[in-house]
Length: 259
Image (tube, rainbow, N blue to C red; front, side, top):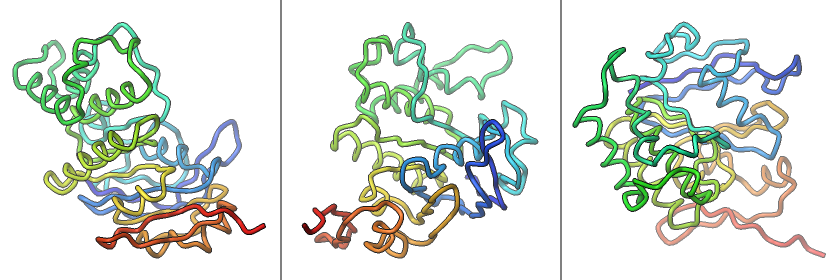
């Protein structure tokens, strides 16, 4: 289990600041959804949390700055799934998922029965068993996205950083993936931070929501506090109603603007 804390985080590219003064705390076992319009800095912030992009301010894992962790320790603590991963097309789904076990192996050790068992369990949960022997280069976009998550989940890290994990997935597989992530959070105490374009999914799965606009936090709180019709109109330029479904779930429903 991992606690994540951000203190005045700033980051960008080529001397251009993309994320400005972001502070947040993600308690162990909770789910933070980072939302915002295109270009708001969501992916940049996630990469900075993962230690993949240098920045100012502090990113602390269990009180320790992420940049002080060795590569192996970071891989044991943090599982990161990029939005557009570059995949080795010749590897099978199983072999690719096994890469997630690397941080848990010795320098010259090979995967054992326990590692294979972890992979098999993850592939089953992600409905990938039938694709286990398929090469990554033959998969559809949605299948590749699930394979990437499989590799991340086999790390068994305490913190998952997921950049648009439902991209390319149909609604059934998207729900199944988010349900699996939520089960890991509840049963294993896994801490989750994800960027999500689908605001209904963000409202229904996340405990807390961080709304970015032009690299700055413009709203933070529970889904009901952040995802309001007024906020969507102001920061997304979108007309939407916030509805309540039969069991109390929030639904963000786009509506056609009046003519």
